[in-house]
Length: 502
Image (cartoon, rainbow, N blue to C red; front, side):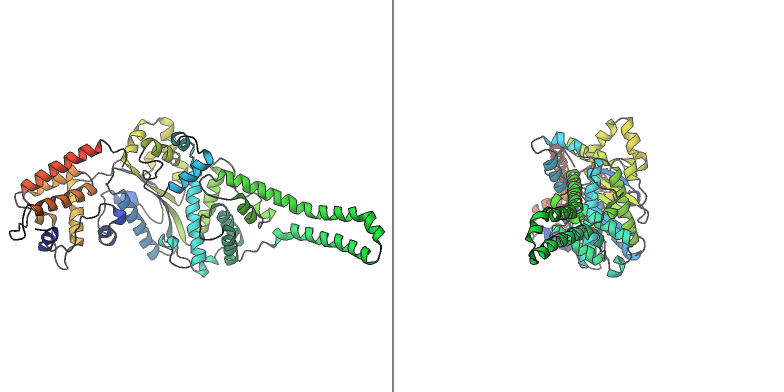
């Protein structure tokens, strides 16, 4: 008796429990994402047009990635139905490139355990701004389906015309600092954006024009004397022409050196992004001195400038109809350099737990974190709690599931894979000897959806292997259920001793 025969008998088209990762699970992504929720969903999701921070801790398989996908899905639906109250979504869930660049900047030969504690809040803010600015620039330049549009950034030429001159300058500055696209040369991309914004910087050319003008005047004067046959005058006063040329180019040289120095300082302090000083200097040379005067620049080891730059980004997206920004933080345990280490995850995450950062108006961070970090939270001192103010952050200490909730999740997946018009239930798969209460208790012992799916799949396979197609048995006995549950729980207990993160 094969697996599919058993499913067909119960009017189930395909295996509801085949996939265990929500990121690659077609059943969840296409059929369950809108109707299967954790009991704490409302607290975690909040209100889209007034984003708030949530901190969720859950063990491996508890549904953190599913939560991220659901939050993203519902924010897209909100954006579609509220075009003037949209929410800008930033997925901060791939830490590998930022950790790699940070380690290259801070020290290649030092151990990661000593490097990551130097990862500061402003580094996180730089990474978040890099993702957000790149999405925004992609949407302005591309105007077609791309990663930015998948995040909910759909713009038209009319939207871009909403920017005033100062906002265009701010967007171009942010692009110079944070655009992380590798699709084309950064200078060409910046010039393309400037053309799309129709932001002209003619004043930035005055120093070069003055230099060329005085050079032409000086050389032209010498040429006139030579043409008139007054070579003696040229031989006697050539140094005057040289001085005119030198003084003519001094303003441009000063401007060039100041831009280069500024670009080097910014490139040195942007430790999680790749910014070539020469390319950045070329871009900054297009700004006049007055355009850069008193502007926040990420050239110091402090958060003040980053808060100001984040405020400029919020103002830009607000002009485009985005009343809030939501940052989704997930998969903290997955970077290959962290490799599930609780100590390294703590070092990476702790700088972000800052109440000033998390409680900015119109800004919210959704943390979906491994449960191993809760023990570090409990050990922290008073200063940490005063800075983080976790009591204000909608914290969910554990992403627990009751047996009844897990039963509903399994039923939802079965219904999603059922034939049209059929309504099979999980209880229908079992013999009447197994009571509803026993089923709830068994699912409760499995704790998380991933374990439930894995167990149900293995149990159905074990049942099918006990019967032939000639003499099929369409309901699983209580004995098979209990035997497979005992074996599965024993394996999970043994495996848990070697698991460091979830």
